[in-house]
Image (cartoon, rainbow, N blue to C red; front, top):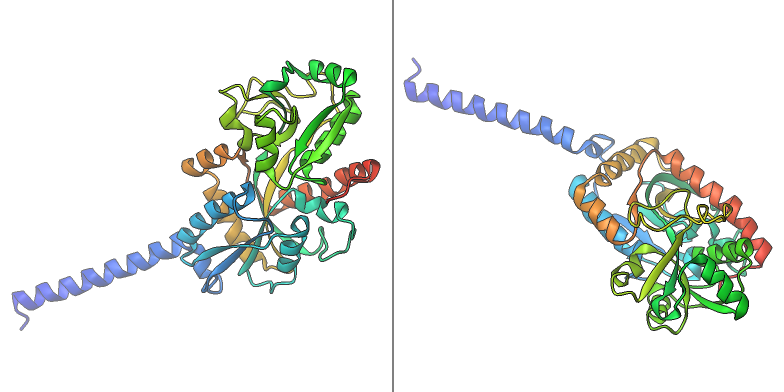
Length: 336
């Protein structure tokens, strides 16, 4: 005959088993990726085709940290710079399509091969060599003047340049900033000379120091210097004003309707990545991009979280390749 103690032990065991079953059920909800063929069951490599320290690298490290917490596996950022991003991108295009090698690419991904002297076909197929997963952020681009230049607005910029040619700084020949400047020059008739730098930091530093009067740049690198007056935003090359700088007019508002170039970043995998893995990563990234701390951090880089389905990234990539490929050809733009 069961004693009171044995009854209590039996109840305790049943209660423990019930709690364990509930915990396992909750775990299945919290980690949907683990229910899809065991993915992931080993570390994931997130490739950045640029040096450490830039915007893409910073975003990659932010997303890697968040993905790691959700997937239960390490997500390691691997910087593979060189040839305007072609080296790192080509590496991912040739990786196994198993979800363990991914690429966080900026919008230069779409045009890198067009501006390299080796031309299209060097290393990977922009449109067909990857699996789009999600467009992570959009980064409005601005026309900005050094405070030391005395340039008041876009109209003043154009007038001054016609009286005496002005120089402008970008992170390099063939960069989106260079392409935007070419579009701006054509639309406004401004007389501008390009001064390419090897990266964002040296370009911005020379504008801050007053050595170069102008730059075409995303907001993040110049934002800390707006309050001091070392840099002034003159216009944004987007269809609408940026919520990050709502007082800055669009170039369309100022009468230049054909100047629009917004930088973006997107997560890609090798060609042939399974639909289940794409869905898992897309779902997690959409959730991550809604986190308040992520929204805030992305804002410090001058970006706005985007998200959406893989088709959104695929369309943006194809549209940029077609549109900016024409600009590259018309202006004979090449990377250094």
